[in-house]
Amino acid sequence: MDPLPYFLLLLQKNVVLCSIIATGSFANLGLSQIDHKIHSDQAIDLLNYTLGKNEVFPAINIMLVESATTITFHTPDAKYFDYPEVYFGRSGPERVSEPFTINGIESQTRKKYLGKFILFDASLPPASVYVRRSSLYGYVIAISFYKYDLPKVKAE
Image (cartoon, rainbow, N blue to C red):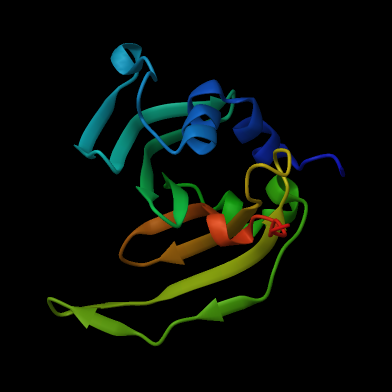
């Protein structure tokens, strides 16, 4: 397996996030020492969360659905979008959405799909990584683990 890029290595070393990815659950996380907001059994926000020395996020939203676990890192920092090669070891083509208007405010989203990364053994799906810049939501790193990306097991 190739060495992981900086940001994904931080994710792989984070006990709380790895537990959620591995179990697909928020149970037994010991959140008493972590600023958080529970939305439901399937959604939680970790607030002012430190992933690494220089990687602090005002909010990390985690969604658990039957088909995937998605971790969305919200940040005011453009560095992940502007320099994905530094944090993820690669970039991707930039896609720009059509502008849209909400309450009289025009918004537009730019995103780069950085591809799939193998963070864990074959029992867990690879990470699909996007970085986004939205005039409405700011900068976002979205990492999804889709269950349909798991290797198919042949029935005997």
